[in-house]
Image 1: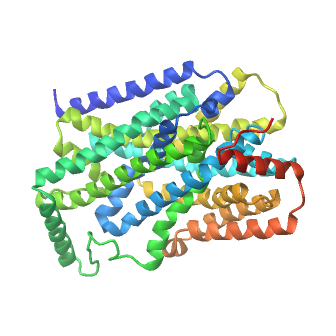
Image 2: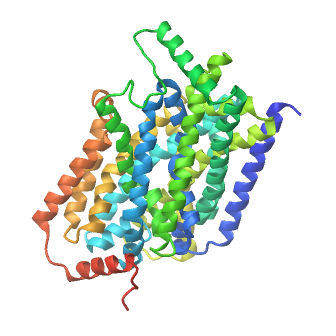
Image 3: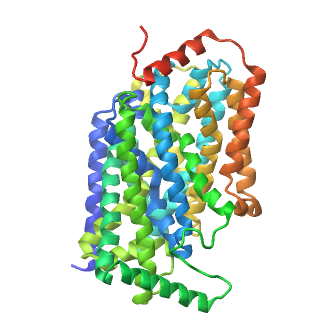
Length: 506
């Protein structure tokens, strides 16, 4: 059997396992609450690993290693910022959001929570939130599809288009039928596979090269050769600071701000069994995140050393993890490692499709006042998944799209539009619906304006001005429109008590 056939066999087994998990989840899904939130019965380990897997996507195994391979550790500030942001999110958002979404009319989506939190009878807040989710997630899902196409193109020399269709199609199948539970359970399997691969590749590579000292020496030699070839572009890839600017490092760390507003991540908090589970979830999730981020960074740096010592042209730096796994392992094992890349890509696409589906069915169709059966609602949810997948697929037809660029734009959009709103909703009783609306709209607009202006986006990551301006608008408008609302105050106080370990009021 040829190397390619061994790898295809491993990838095929992975696809079969994901479809099997999707079928299991399908048998457990009977109503819209099950389809969108798994009945609020996620264990902390499942929630934590699925949040991490759905968060990191192809960025972790392709985008981040590619950026570090090119520029060095200075690009690692993104991972540092993300880790800090994730810890803060689990610590300060998870327990309160889990409590508040149940107390406030058992909200199962972010837009419905905002409407119920503020008792907004106009429905404007929910509609705007749903539209923002659909717009930015379409870009986000598209980035995953691009990563899938690049994977098959670089690994098996398959046409980009058919690779994209295959990855998207398999993901679409288990998401269509398994819903949120299917996405979460496949995320766990995929997250563990990603962890194993990101530990195995750098460890085996270091041993193969003769130790850490040999790796560092070859990185320095590679930098020296690159600097001699192009004196205008000096490299010191083992430095966290060299080659970066103050604004550049701030921009990288600011990725951590995005966590507070990512619907596909914070929905895991809403699905926990109880607020108390957030503590265990935080420990498991951050441990997974640190190990995988370190593995991705190490793989990129070791790749620099490897391809200097054993010269080979790496046409696309974002494929450094893929190529290293093919070089280091038996073809079947390499196929399993390659499946980890697919796991990263597919876990994120699945989670985002579910959130998009909820935005279409629960937050846009549902507000029309039409009453449908559980079966009809689930069918509508599946149609929503299909519609978003088709639109994202059209956007992903361009193989030159940068995975990191697509992800960074969508991440900033959610972080600025929803991050300040979620935090203020959970920690400020006097936050108003008009303040939330002003924050959401201003954050999204600033990200669009800043992110589509090349000069501005190169200077400072668009999430920073978007987050700051959204927060200011939210606070100022709330101060101007606040008024006493006994139901909101009662629910807010009950949320604080319950998230701290109390029980629900009768």
